Image 1: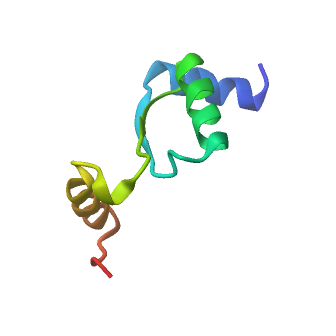
Image 2: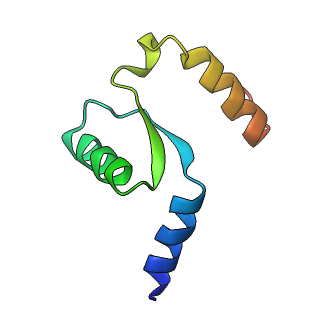
Length: 71
């Protein structure tokens, strides 16, 4: 098993939720489809981040995780 295959196997065992904020970008859309089809993650695709209903929730969580401020 190659290094990359072992990473994929680990990701499939415990798929994480990943937020993609560039949802209007065709390359991101294609990548999300491939990741989900391969069972590597649970993707959240946001096409317009500022209008997403959970935008503020995601910002707050990001700040907590990074110990950062809004700026």
